[in-house]
Amino acid sequence: MPCSVRLMRKEDIAQVTEIDREAFPTLWAPINYQHELQNRLAHYIVAYNEETVGEPEVKAAPAKHRTGLLFKMRQLFNHNRLFDTEMPPSSKQNIVGFAGFWIMAGEAHITNIAVRELYRRRGIGELLLISIIDLATKLNAKLITLEVRASNTAAQSLYYKYGFTQIGSRRGYYTDNREDATLMSVENTASTSFQTHLQHLRQAHSRKWGIALYRIAQ
Ligand SMILES: CC(C)(COP(=O)(O)OP(=O)(O)OC[C@H]1O[C@@H](n2cnc3c(N)ncnc32)[C@H](O)[C@@H]1OP(=O)(O)O)[C@@H](O)C(=O)NCCC(=O)NCCS
Image (cartoon, rainbow, N blue to C red; front, side):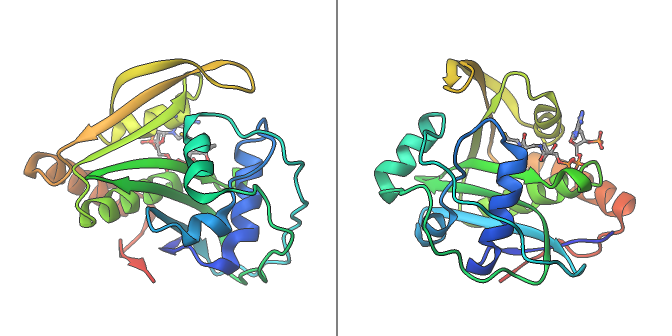
């Protein structure tokens, strides 16, 4: 099932919110993607296929807390109201995953990467990560960082595969269950050694999943 990647648009928000809910069920409210799309520091992409979709069901969430330091930063920068009452009309493309990062002073911080449960283990997480790394490198990020739950071994294996290493941890970072966050990063993304490693992985991914073009469309 070949997928394509493009920048996230307003009409993707309903489906992206649905995927966010499914991927992070213990959190009370999804990120406010309407605000994220207006945030010049934030960059979001979606993976989609051409299957037709109905209107996703997105219910307003109670305005409780989202966990972690990043969420608090977002509130500071965005005056995040958690959820707007009006949702833009939904895209007709089937959004199967999304990812995003914030970039500041040469550092890209991955905020989210998630794939619809039904579509997992089909190379889409990898496609999203390759695209995020490409975009961040193009925007002159030298360092890519992220936090991941200590128990989230699936996501950690994905990051390790792409050369991320553990650089520390934050005790009790996730306020829903006081779980620790593992901090991971990859440095010198523009270096020849990293780009060679990335190119090998991209070729292997392309052979396995039949994806011909790794290009982020507008
Ligand atoms: C993490 C996530 C994005 C991976 O997406 P995916 O499309 O299933 O991943 P892929 O099929 O591209 O797998 C790529 C690599 O990820 C790792 N991986 C993915 N799922 C895994 C699992 N269940 N167990 C172990 N490793 C796994 C493997 O290293 C895999 O490489 P391999 O195929 O050579 O073994 C997906 O599981 C997800 O959406 N999880 C919920 C949201 C989340 O936890 N996001 C991370 C927040 S930091």
